Length: 306
Picture 1 (cartoon, rainbow, N blue to C red):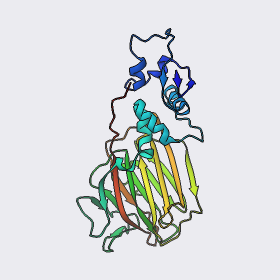
Picture 2 (picture 1 turned 90 degrees about the vertical axis):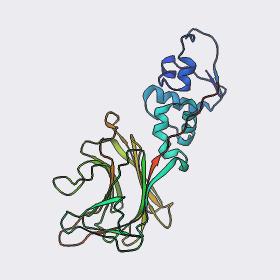
Picture 3 (picture 1 turned 180 degrees about the horizontal axis):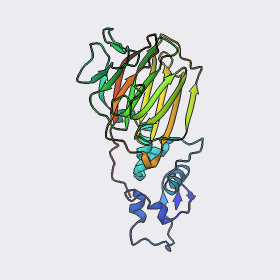
Picture 4 (picture 1 turned 180 degrees about the vertical axis):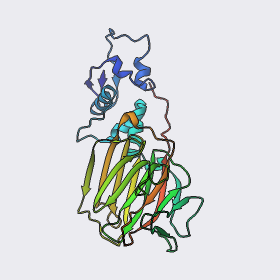
């Protein structure tokens, strides 16, 4: 193939690996023969096309430092490589492709159409009498009434009162604490404590594959009684947790992880939950503000131009 002026040799098996793609439509027909001598020309950047080919071969995204994942997404959309589109869209697609499904500024007491609360843990309480804020005391939990399956983004603000406080956000959650009463029984858990962000899989949900990737920009440091912004993305096979200085968003820490592929489907329960932790003999206090839950609106495929 002549791709952007560069000759690239590959196999029919690789080109047709995604049966719904433009490449499969071009090269998967019975009229095409590997013995043909014609050169097929594709007008795109050969560096990005090689990344696409490697993904089709190995089901792994291998990217040089000077290439952008947004560029890969644009080409994957054109070629209609569905699995690669699903992998990249939630992180590198347009912001307009997220649809807001729940938003709460906590300017009124808890809306029972949006949330349920769990204060069954010892000394757990929720204070919803502060305009624009929801206060979680000890291991009080805020749980969404509706279920929001993966390809979900959760944003908001968090403030803590003590260095031992922590923020726990669950996706794919059943909304139930386990037998030890310390954490939710199932779900993908995103939590922040003492300047560290973590992601864990609990119960019958996928486990994290390999190590988490952590990126810190600026001198990010958690300070008590100050609001921080957060963003959680659960994109089925990839998860991301961003915590940033609300006044200076460029100062942040981001953690990304890949889920084990054989277990990357979501379970039957897909509630969203927030909670703090408790401390014996003292109150642990976390405050939430401006919570927004968004779900991905799939990119509308267009017929390819041959």
